Image (tube, rainbow, N blue to C red; front, side):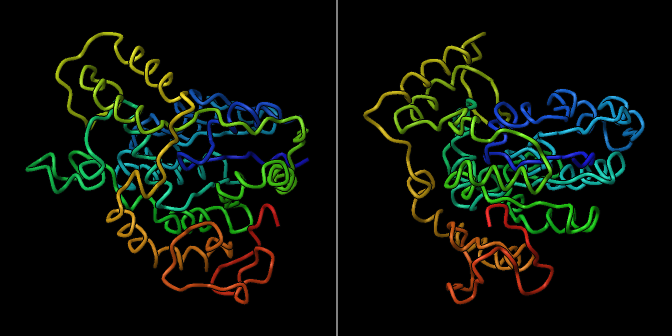
Length: 336
């Protein structure tokens, strides 16, 4: 089995919590590094104080074990665009300086679904603003609070996946960067996991691994209720409005909303319903060109899974595997 570290950097809302709880801890012959340790070693130090030697010591490198890291914050925080991409970029260099031989795992998700999930997570985290205020904060903010460098907010740029993927390929080599589609994982479950483990050289009994979600999305009543109840707590997102902070109210609020969301009579809204028709269509257009570059870079059949594209690829454009034919595209298909 390979001794190269595995560093799973996210993105958020692509089942990273499931991998942290149900998959990586069960890999044989490897040590899964706790998330708190990963954050302490690679994210929390300021850029001008980061020391690769200290980070390596905190992670426990050099002890002859294969390490597995899985922390979605390594790709940047979803509600602030990875600090305008600065954190996302710097962390890539930090990882390279500590583990230059690492295998990098990046899960991505079709942007309309991803961004809807981000807003759902924002509301679940106590956010009280509307979807328009969340997605387009510059329209509502003035002076210093409207400047990204002073007060980072949600950013569509964070989901131009090919930018970060290209950086990691440059730093680690194309064969060390493994791009996975969240949708493929959701649809194929155990088959996906078997191929995923084989590609990374991980020994795990995938048949005994539960693929049930760790967290579910809120249904419509729970989303509405959460926005109302969130007016009485300052937790946990920064960009929100609240009337008064009641200690411990957030825990109570979450319990109430989880109970409402468990009711069988209501479903979670679709991405189009969550975002609204106009925003949904705008997001599709926003990422169409970016996803063409993503497809060329990875060779993955993203058009099959709802990723908007400026050029509509047909089955004749795809060879049945996951091998691209242009640019830097290569065999990235976990389930192929």
